[in-house]
Length: 286
Image 1 (cartoon, helix red, strand yellow):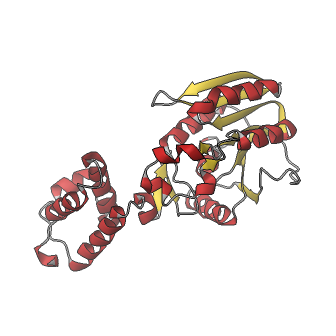
Image 2 (cartoon, rainbow, N blue to C red; image 1 turned 60 degrees about the vertical axis):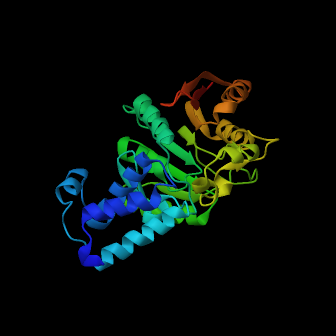
Image 3 (tube, rainbow, N blue to C red; image 1 turned 180 degrees about the horizontal axis):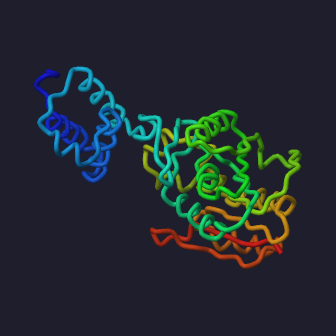
């Protein structure tokens, strides 16, 4: 079977097997990711090598990826890696897959702070994508990354080495009001859990069945749980005129902004993402 298969036939196989599971645009994306991962081909090279013969081992690997995708396992977890802000990150099922909306939050921070020396804290760092992207693009700054999951912190260490940046990584449970943390910062950023339980029914199986639920969901009766904790922490650990940047649930952006105003923050800006949804908040501590 292996010697009869070409790259062109592999592409047809993937499309045929997945057509009832995913939209064609998503399948096309899978095809590039898989062939790039297994063969190192660029999009142009894929088109140039359509008649190239594929060996038995490649077909076995392709079938493995097809079966995993049929179970709706995210392609990033299958590959064990993803890109974020033009950087490569290792990911696993213990951390969220970095999203394009979060890239926009990183872009905002870089744009507003690129000419300054800053001490930055990323709360709930997960894979370390925000902290590492900021360290890479704000080289004058010192970046700290904290999380309450030891596995996430281990992954952040791996990703910091992978991307050749030096960041300070430590354990912190933001919901534990008895935590000890003796640092202050010019910038605090967080993309905390903010999806309510009732929003589960709107989510795709590749998210619900594979991504860590403790990094996604908050109780319906307390949707601002993490924001309250982050804001209280920021009141103690932000320097004068320090900035707080948050990714937020589009349904609770105004409530979060009002909470910030109550807590002595000013110049509060609720910003839309590329999908025209209010997903970013930035503000300054008075």
